[in-house]
Length: 303
Image 1 (tube, rainbow, N blue to C red):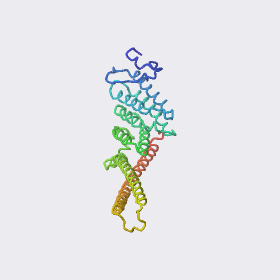
Image 2 (tube, one colour):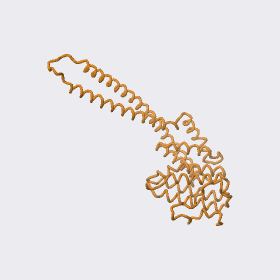
Image 3 (cartoon, rainbow, N blue to C red):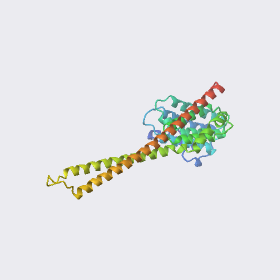
Image 4 (tube, rainbow, N blue to C red):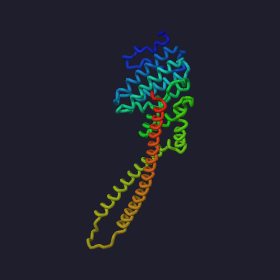
């Protein structure tokens, strides 16, 4: 490899903990030959695969996301000069990597980088439609479903990447004719906002719980104060004005407590309704994924 590509040498700075093959600023790169570009991307995918297979909390998901964004930017820049055979090798490798996530006991890192997987597939599909994307798209449906079930906002980004893939790809024709429009209809009805609204309701419920707890403490303290405030004359039957005021104050606190309880009940009912809607759409995503995979198997026995 010539000196102008020495920054991508796998040996350089590795001992210092610096990942040596990072692309950096794409706009500063020269136009590369396919072999050079594929060599760089292979190193990215080697690192990605070795990281994803760690299956522990040491995985830096943020770093993996940024690295995959670099690959996508590199491919979109037009400087990679990758041809059909290079795209095939790249797609085969990336699909094999993410297929492992289906069997992984801890798929946190796979789902955490699924949006970037979708981004690369979408980017490549704009330049090369001759690949059989069936398995790759099936994996995207799997991870989109997982992200939604984990209540991660990234599911909508995976969906948008799917929607952007060319209609000329067979599996995309199938999806767009039968399922993606249904998901789009849900999105237009606001399903992508359900998580945020649900979180807001839980936050409000938490604050109401705190207010109710504080009121309980205050009511208890005032009741104790009343009980400890004994009259000087045991025979006295007239309740002092101050004590009457304290009793009324406790009554007002009790009324406020009932109001807060009613407000919390309303928020709980709304949260339950949102949760049911989320569950309904999540179940539908699962049905769509399974239906699509069954149709692909019947139409292509090699899938």
